[in-house]
Image 1: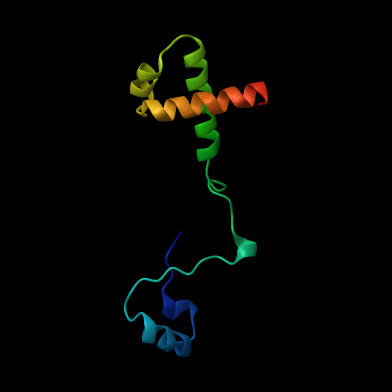
Image 2: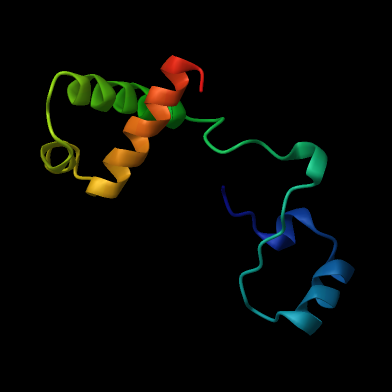
Length: 94
């Protein structure tokens, strides 16, 4: 998300009206419903997390315990358990 200077994109009358409510403050204007994008759609984050989670699951299957996986991936044991369960469900279609 980038910031735009209100003076460059809004008419003066609208700026004056907004200033009645939030003078000199930052304000977030949400996207319209028809322009919303899903989380991670503009980055490779989802793909990277899927690769990481698959690797965690494979490490788990190879015998590495949850505590060690937590240390290796800097995650809590609970997070590792959640990832393992999710990956198991994906692979067994549960």
